[in-house]
Length: 140
Image (cartoon, rainbow, N blue to C red; front, side, top):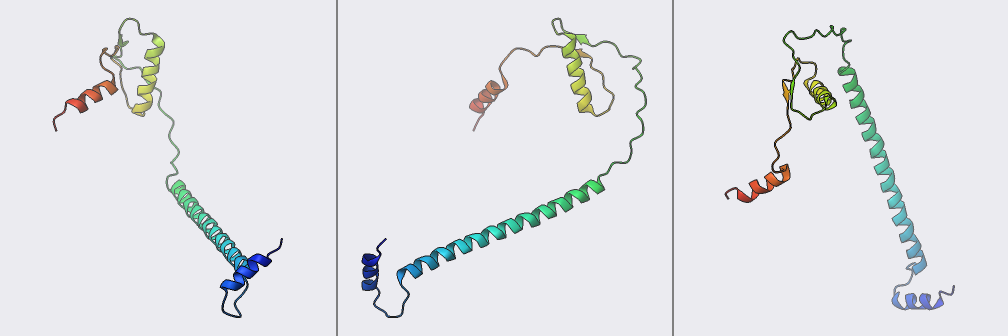
């Protein structure tokens, strides 16, 4: 590549003597920009290492603090004396009743409960439809 024309233009704009030529300025600028980018990358990577170490220490401290004591063996579940089969609306299969009972048991966390009846929800507006009616009819 012949830079003589560009060098002549740069020399015409460069009135002061002793200033560096334009290729030196360009290379210096590029090197400086990439050096700063590498420095920023290293700073951000180092911060990531520091914050990860801090999070790991917090997690280890929380794990040690929340270590549960060994749980005693669960007593056998006794059948309730007055437990009767729940009243179920016609058309609801037993698998659905079992799934509902399992969901309630998992949410109760070991508390005693009894499902007394299971029936289908009334047909009506959907939750989105009811929300739309409420928002459009409420006073200002």
